[in-house]
Length: 328
Image 1 (tube, rainbow, N blue to C red):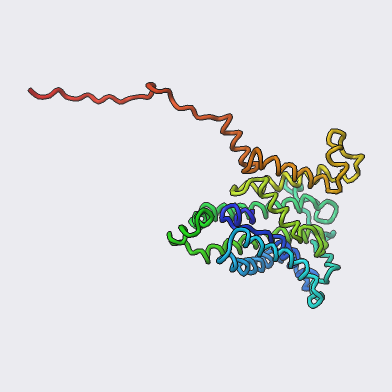
Image 2: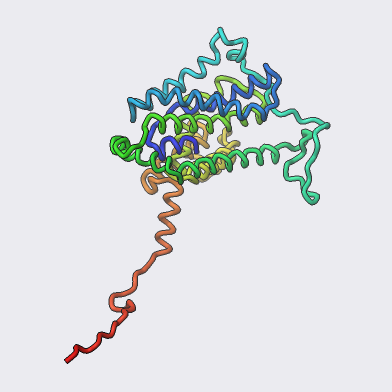
């Protein structure tokens, strides 16, 4: 959703969101391991740090756009993994070895929360923690969705669309391009850092060579948004759910013998992960048949089924007004 706010509504291409994701990851990891902070206390800190970095990155966006802006953000995505492995800050990031023990500590002292005998949060004492992280993730998604919806439906949202359609006309109409682009870039970066922090808390281990911290992560975020439907609030959410569903369903296909027979000839010969291949094939098909993603496909299907038929000519009710006869 954060990338959609930047690209779908403002028209600014970013290939560096993996760096903002990494800022969230390393802010949480450093805060927990170096300074002893509670993992969830690091979430607002990561939000603030990524916001500042996003505003700084937006400065080139005032002069350039399109593919040139994409190249600038691509450089950011390439530099970040090398930066956290820089020997001069290895005392902080632990270099290429990464950091561990960055997660929430589950122990027997933690309470259990029940609602009418049902425990939706899982066992916080360490036996079943998946429901806990699920609801934390849902809460973050809901919060980010509400923020994005509030922005899009506000005056600022109309300014973003105006910048996307014609930045020159937007400036003539009184839109402050510098402030608007800076704020949206900062918010996009900050919201991208939140799942990064949650990832560090969930896995408990941070490495600079993780796929989502590289340019591959930026491309993954971009493809998820396009598959779901850019320019739509729900599009990135649906794209992420679909992506995770494909990855989970094909997680055991690394062994060619476990690939179902109907699709085995398509994926058994390739070294690419089957889940990534299926998702790439889905993207290609959507570009031909539904260029606006899953959301666009849904709207098209609804428009096909539910058709508003106008009344035939001559059946509309007509109000006749009686006119008084002319005076003789």
